[in-house]
Image 1 (cartoon, rainbow, N blue to C red):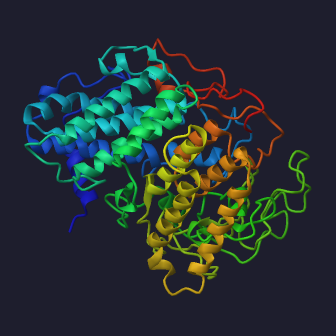
Image 2 (tube, rainbow, N blue to C red):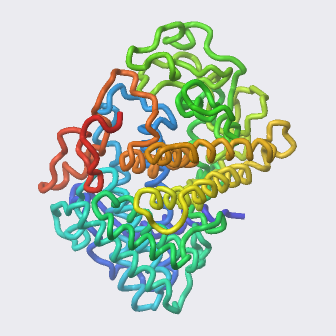
Length: 561
């Protein structure tokens, strides 16, 4: 029997016959010229929207069959020390072709599809299709603003060649309007329903909750430049109660175990678990140390999510410089001796430092790798078995956690503390940690059930109690740091919100410095994609990656590293 994903791919192949996009004849941003070529049937509306939903997953996570760093989440995880960023400096860590696929999928696929879908959906009274399409557009466009800064929008959607860039603030305003329009459409009675929805199964009420949560996120993201508007907007959303509050409403993309025609496994699983000894990603020494309650973490209780996030292939760390070139070396002066350097103090948690671009020794069967959450890997039960087969764990049936209920609680905690919005920050913090642990353990229950290493309720309570005790005893700044540290841990698998919140708050304030030196030039935005510059005469490349996006009004120096 074909999976939903397989059926979708076949539909997309068929739909592709209607599109001819040639870089020789059109610009990267040029939209479809002849929507009349598409048959005006309900089936084709499904094709358009299926295409957009898969494109959203690809933009967030990366394309299957390509390096996962083509997705926005991976880059955000690297810059915020969730996984190793190669570096060695921020200026050269990522080339300008980094997000070519993200750019292409946003403009030539999602926005292009939506401009064709809109009149067809309106004519057929397919308001649900239209509302969902608009929300996907709002998410990806605001993500481009968050990562790149000013981008073309008003002229791009109008089909103008060589469109000018709009300011990030103008685009945010347009996206708030688009989200409200989407909510209006989702509240209408549709003549046809969207039966092949890959996120919420065609449940308009859940999509409306996501819409309001997206607005909440954007209000919080822009609180430094629009505090009064953000406060009022967030309070209105809280009062409505119509936003993501439980795991049942989580906005995530569900990958499958299918590995051929098409490969619909989580891209990070496919990259690291496909063949004997090819584990490619390095986990972050800093992030693992934080969950381990290691030196400098200010915790004494190990995180209950530790064995779900990471899997150890060996029960030891490197033993010589052939296995790890920094073995036995003193840390850089700017590291000191209170934070991890080269390795962790715990056997098997074999990672790399932030910006470590040293050569690759024969350690692919030694380094720690992804666990069962969120990529569908293996729960760490002290088996210490190198990854030699793709038939391990949940075989890639992972998730892309785009917006979870736990995330919302952390955002509301930050909002309550910094803006004075409705609710108690401590209550939101406790609920965020509780929901995150529950989500992770529930996801990995099939792997961990019966294991002596499955966290007991006493382990969970001890961790939460320590977090709350630290919060209670802290001053205002340290309270926010506690919130953002726990948010950072819960965001594993979502580099978008990690990258955004780090630039917005400067917290967690103890992230491991980049290995190359004591620098003050953190990557505040990414280079524009090569395709956006080379195909548009009104587009110039930025000089460096220290350029700040419109909502980042924090100090240019001395703020984050």
